[in-house]
Image 1 (tube, rainbow, N blue to C red):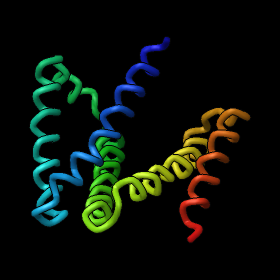
Image 2: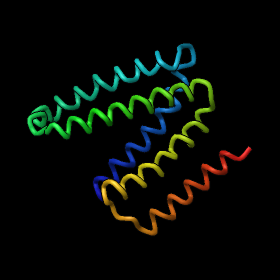
Image 3: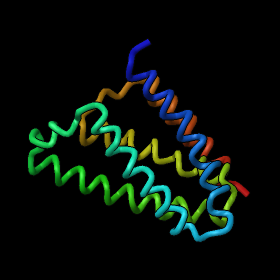
Length: 140
């Protein structure tokens, strides 16, 4: 198995845990308070990870363009997390998570048009299943 697949599976497992744990964590506080605690924890742990793996030297490789796009990614992450936490605070985490994962369709479209990634029949079929699942959820 390729290393990126293993990393993606680990990411998937922890992302699945994240939503359920977050729902429990915002039980007695606002979504914004929960998000501050989560984001602060992420911030500290990412810095520890960078220092542990000696990645600090990579800062010298950053270009102005890299910084602009990474900051824009941070902005979009922030907006996504704010509304995700508001949604799980008042809604069922199972439904919120399923709708949120519809972002995969947006990612696929942007990866084809902006990054010129390969568009295969497997991706089309998989995206079709995701879209059908979202439609089923939307039907009352």
